[in-house]
Amino acid sequence: MEEAKKICVYSGTAHPQLSHDIAEYLGVPLGKIHPMRFPDGETFVQFEENVRRADAFLIQPTCAPVNDNLMELLVMVDAARRASAARITAVLPYFGYARQDRKDKPRVPITAKLVANLLTVAGVDRIITMDLHSQQIQGFFDIPMDHLYARPVLVPYLKQLVGDDPVVVAPDSGSAKMAMNYGDMLGGGFAVVAKRRINATTVASSHLVGDVRGKVCVITDDLTSTCGTLIAAAKLLKENGATKVYAAVTHCLLNEVGQKKLLEAPEIEALVTTDAVPQTSDLGGKLKVVSIAPLLGEAIRRIHDGKSVSSLFYINH
Image (cartoon, rainbow, N blue to C red; front, top):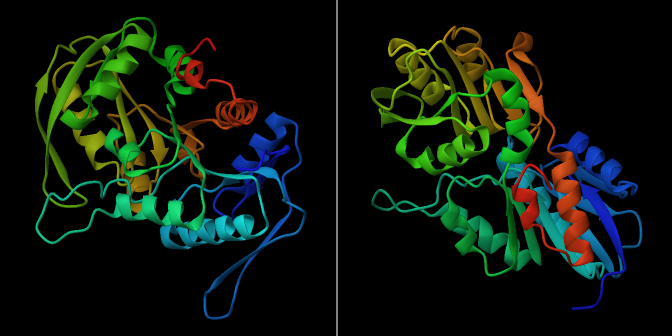
């Protein structure tokens, strides 16, 4: 691979504000790029500056509209490759299709692997992403991947809300490891809620393992879209004597249904999240957003300089 001579940061249309904040952290101008749609909906992208031998970082969370944003990223990658960028790194603060990561029913796809293949074939040399829905997705890529965590960003803010002795709660068994890691960083206890999914939008929380009586609780998860899992868990915690319940998720993908549910859920004091995907409202102060731009910016700088990013997994880096 040709040696890259400079950092070039480019933004798709999914989240230009985050891209601007990352470029500002790095002290570099946001690259000039012209995306557009043809009348029939086709995506077109043109780089409006020289990217030859550039270390190009293309920032695009594949949030809603997922298919449009994913296709735009693929087109950006192809354009950068054909313009002779030395290295192309796709920065996906949120990796869409991550929930389709296994064959759990007959005749269904593993779409997370398909997306990994598409990115690789398009010409991506490296991936930066954050809090994947499952760790095994890293194995879907045959190119280097830097998997970052939102905990170093969210934990300092959470400490101000929950104090020194919270209980961190996993809303289902799949989130147990994440919750334990949050518990270690917050210096608190740990509990797990047993969840039964009724359908794609409805869940029922039935059993609680752990003592939450008289405690402030924090429910942690990688993402939420309808808030069903969080609210069901919060109700169970309140029934078992929790004094206050907060939620912390990396990717807040709330649709209108989810926003309405959160606003009408007195059990949850606040939902703390990141700006990995754009937020249109703070829901009357109930949604607290913490920026990951410095974390992603520092990761980009270290990757460009050939330095380790592992210290970014901790608060004091």
